[in-house]
Length: 497
Image (cartoon, rainbow, N blue to C red; front, side):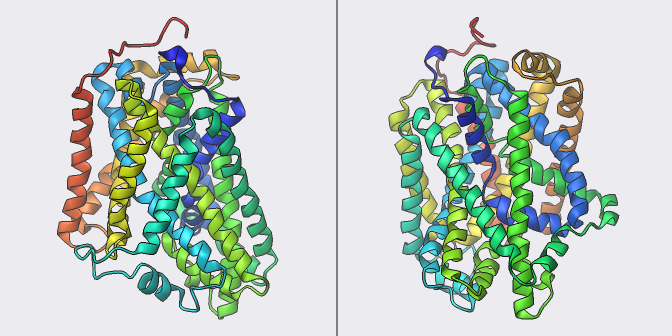
């Protein structure tokens, strides 16, 4: 069956697809704020240390595992040792949680593109987003009715994801060039526009002015490792399945460096688009930059629309561009979440992708409707927190343990060096066996302690308990899926490798 596995049409297709999977909505609204909050320009020091001691090593690990085993995450881990297959399934269960709510945020972008034509969010952007658009209920215990404009946007997103994937890898190889290059073009336009606005320099000062005193704070270093880990789309099974579609003689190490640096460079560049606009907004409102700076969804759907409305020239055009940027950034991240999930089932049970894919898309859409209700925003926030803070961290930690100690890091390094354009040294073994798992382990433990002491987000205790139950549930489900017999899996790979 390995000989029949789909292949990327070119190396550039694989690299572009991997970059598209890594670059997502968080590059625009999360990195600039994290950088600003953790020492500005000084944050780049721990950020790049984290990139070279955790991000790139784990990227090489996932590329090497998928390329060698020629399978998605569960089957790849089963080939390492059968009892570790559940680690691959856990990655897919976590990514399942993510692709249930991620398209809902993209649906908001679809709706906001239509609002941008006449700046329909008005002057009170916070009120419009929370009261008029989401129509927020009183809390997670009150789902309220469905917001049909969001449901329609969600249907559009899921249909687009299906269209991107249903014709297979050959079509996807062409699609990714548009879904990655278009947002880069838009981002350049947004940066140029932002830098021409009055007050832009003040915004960039807040973004980049280094505060080296923060480098002694362990939380800053943990924030850097967290940002690197999550922004590269690691521990989702995506990079494993993408690399499994590589031809037999394909580079690993160089590809990992290219994709990782492209992702981080995009994050850094996006900060110029964000903070130049924030500087302009602060000057227009007569306040300081920190007073208009928000993180996450508030930046994208409240702060930025406010700034767009105040632009002196064709604000509607730049409003459309901004939300089109978010939508195109999100679409390749979305289908890169679906692909490893579908591959997990088709690899183990040799199911036909032509009917597995529509079932996944339809179920994803139907379950996602929960997040389109008036209380759906709260559950989106809760699921996002548990999936990212605990799920991905745990999977990354387990990946390091399985490859570093069970399979042996030196063995994987030797394989990577055989097929790569340049050799990686023993530093990689040290990162995979010690540095990365220690950082992820500390982060996981601190997150558990914080959750026990403070709960999350000010939500009722019962809502936090539901989040914990979901987290425990996907671990149990991972063992269940491992225990169901599929096609016989042998350790290692075929002689042709």
